[in-house]
Length: 161
Image 1 (cartoon, rainbow, N blue to C red):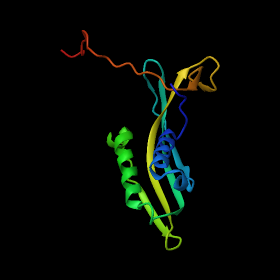
Image 2 (tube, rainbow, N blue to C red; image 1 turned 90 degrees about the horizontal axis):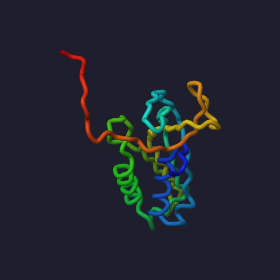
Image 3 (tube, one colour; image 1 turned 90 degrees about the vertical axis):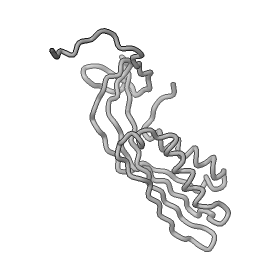
Image 4 (cartoon, rainbow, N blue to C red; image 1 turned 45 degrees about the vertical axis):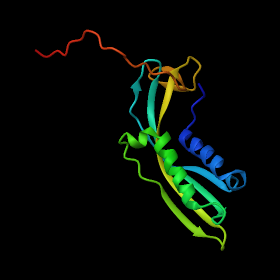
């Protein structure tokens, strides 16, 4: 598995947008993570641990977007479609705000488009004797891992009578 890095969803969305708009327009796109907040709610998941959740505002800005040759409506539709297809946290009741878009005319053929998208993603760690993260008396590294899910439920008691 690939190494997780903060802002993974933002990078994936940018890659998608670059593909949609083409190389020339993609060169005018800059991205940034803002308003970063950490939700400290660790969960052990068998092969690793979700140390916390990272919530941030992704800012995507197109300088000199050629709105006559590429429809901003198509851009917005692609962003919305990507979010619905690739951001399960958004639909899982995480109360993430809908994207906010601002358009500022530059001239008759170009516009500055600013898009803010709220994201939340887990920060997952696995135990590693040489890892750079010191937590609960052990060393860890940021990593992705397989989550084991029970396929059957064996004998159990609820403690209720």
